[in-house]
Image (cartoon, rainbow, N blue to C red; front, top):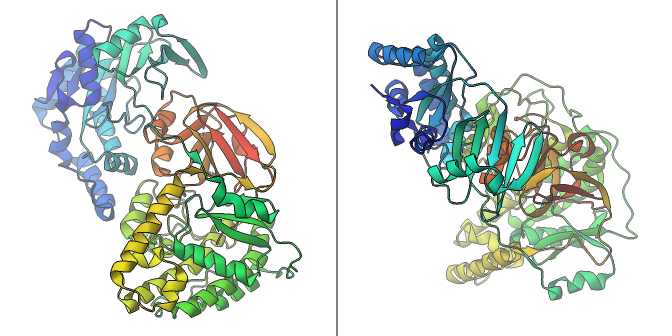
Length: 625
């Protein structure tokens, strides 16, 4: 019942079991064992769907409860016990999920396996392995793979010996005639001919672009297809004519890649132009080919910094027309029942007034305090409802055209699902508080633009993709013409997104500071450092963020999908976390010694995955608008 000899494993037993059965049939040395169908798991927890992020937490909790309390059929347990005893004094129980170890994805490190145990412990460990499919990480991965959550298992005789991971082709180069062999922290590049057993495993499982083979002593304990990083088309340089105005200005203009790596919508560009026209910020701003560039403003008097955070926040709140929630926690918020958005012209004036206070007073306060300085005393962890309400004003990008999480609660639910809520509290870091304030200004402008679109009877999304002056004027705006104009601007932004924008225009490139080395994969990318102290460090991850961590885990790789790159002080190129980062198309450098201590939040860095290098650009200041 649900149990098969390992050589006879079927697709119902999961990806790992099928691969091992093929190795056995090819005559390769695989430890004796048996496979358990995913039907045993489903008989306990039922079919689990991961399509609805708002319900997945409840679904997983209920499934975990059923798994921990259900009584498995006696004949199934008897057969498992009999087969386990026949394997010897020590066995291992390994996951074999239906979305694991396949051509489309490896799920490296997503599901659990046990160390050596006595045969009588197998039923208990089987439930533990099943439980690894009932985690937020597994659900998030399954959602990306557009699959359900079902898991089989493999029980094998435990074998002792030195463990090695062999990639029969280097990741990212499926035609290369060399292999990678990792033993502990040592990584060797060798000709393929030097790993004959791994090559036989590659052929047995039909991995035409290379196999990831784990060997213990003389035994093969795993073989799966290598999931190579998706191909990324090289970026062409931005046309020189588009950069000419910045060059002619004579100042050194720096791309604000850390906050705005993507081209701005016409609405956001219009806000930038109005802030620049006011001349109240210590830096000048220009939008070039859709991208935001800044330069120090010369000769402009800088107001004296306000002494306290409370004073600065009061001035910003007044500019935006906010009222303080009487919660006693020192956190400013929108009214519980937000008033209607002001007219667009008034909202723009408020935005410009806010930008001057933010740039001259809030930014210096943030810059003067190290990461980790709390703006308010820590409190107990927030419940999910409160957390969702508080973070709802944030958006995935600093552009008013991008909907907030509050407008798309399922997106934030999914983000929180991937990391848990244990260490998120209301004691916000000052830099995170800084982000919240900027998000409030963005939301004020966004609401006013949406209201203006409704007033004019045009498509709400299109309103962000026509010039702000036209939206303000509103005369003779035909919905069809608006749609055509918006479509043209979207197409222009998509073209600009594919250009390789220079970090500095009109001056020397920023000098390279520290250069850190590790091993990795992926194309050269530029971004702003965001350090992750824990898996609950932050909720929003931007396209321009370079995530720096002590270690790259599978959970981290899944939760930061969309970031520019991952950098880790520890780990190997063939470890599970790095493998999953590659599968998800994230440039990754691991084993980058001292990265955590030497890189700080906000630094502009260039990460070259294929070269295994991280270079710090000095003097490349960035801002937002």
